[in-house]
Amino acid sequence: MPLREVLTQVLNEYGDATPMPFGGHALAGFIRHQGAEAVAEAMGPEGKGLKTVGSAGAGNWAVAPWIAVFDPLVTESATQGHYVVYLFNAKASTVHLSLNQGTTEVREEFGSDARTVLKQRAKFMRDRLADYAPLLPVTSIEMGSDARLPGDYAAGHSMGFTYQLDGMPSEGKLQEDLLSAVRAYRALTFRGGVNEVSEAGSADDEGLSPAASLIEIRRYRHHKRIERNPGAAKAAKKHHGTRCQVCEMDFGERYGTLGQGFIEAHHLKPISQLEEGVPVEFDVATDFAVLCSNCHRMVHKMDNPSDINALRDRIDQTAQVRRARAQ
Image (cartoon, rainbow, N blue to C red; front, side):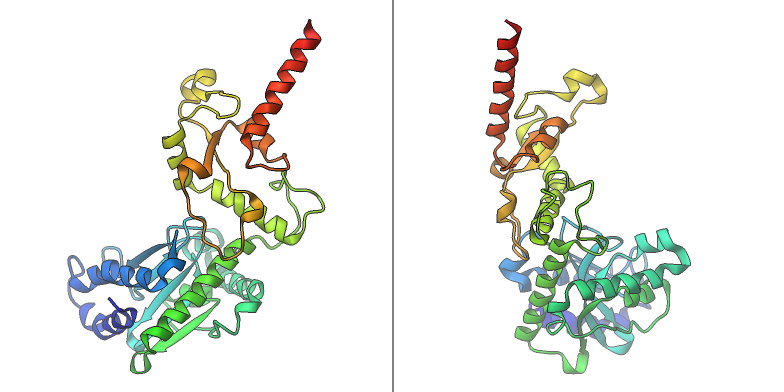
């Protein structure tokens, strides 16, 4: 279904739908299913690895329905992280394509100061993506309500587009704008998202050289995000099992029920091959290994963290030296 048709249908029908019972309403289902599918199709190959979700509310009609694009490395929920989203202001017959952020987690942490924090983070996103400013020119949106969620969405908006029902762009222009937003989204994630203000090395960057360049820091942190993706880790464990592929340790055998089923996923793609804006596709069989915590830390200290065989050889060589000394 064309993206333009989805956006116009939601704007045309939402006002008439909201006085009616929410449960089972066709428009709510349309937003969840056909709407999300249309956004996914409009992204084409550039949508690889991304998840599209539509919502008209949870149990009741939302003041501001939405269709969002989530990167699982960042979030799979509109409550946290950062994401691309179509925000509908049906009263004003307007829809915003917004690079936005999870408002719920911010409100839970900062309470009445949430909108101040959201606006500060939105500015930080714009600053981090200054090179995308000409492509995503709208830096302020109106949601037609100061209610909690619509008002928070407006505060959390960083950059994007605004479309009017009576001036809806062509399908080609809508797709072009969406791809610009998705590229900015991927760039923001690669550059550190909304929370990593410092580009200097941190305690979490143990595998990095102190002289690492900015791009090396960003690549390393992106690599760690991939490894910490719960879905990838679960799939790696299911495929490879829970025994370390370097030292063969099994946490269950060593720690009993406490360690049963525990193992860490290690992304094998060389860090140097991670590039800003390039989707990362997961082939669990070839792109991930499962390692115990010690081997995982050690492999990140090596010149080539993707070479787990070299780490295994080091262990064997060390064991041989130890045996020789004992004789």
